[in-house]
Image 1 (tube, rainbow, N blue to C red):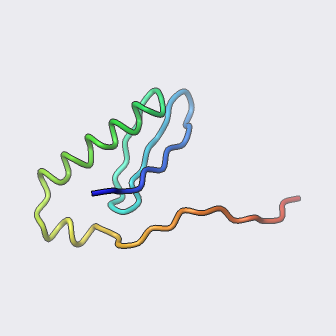
Image 2: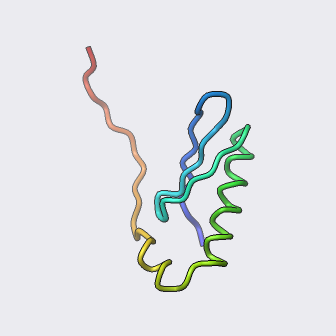
Length: 71
């Protein structure tokens, strides 16, 4: 299954988020944050019932940028 991983710098590390399931993790590097998110997702799928997965899984996620006026 392919899921979205949004990774952003936070302080000295990185935070990773899967918006489809609202599951997050973190790491000291982008790669570590991504790998830790993958592990958190795999653990979720191992522990969650099919009903919980269905309830939490958002079908379509779109990541884009918007331009806004500032100042």
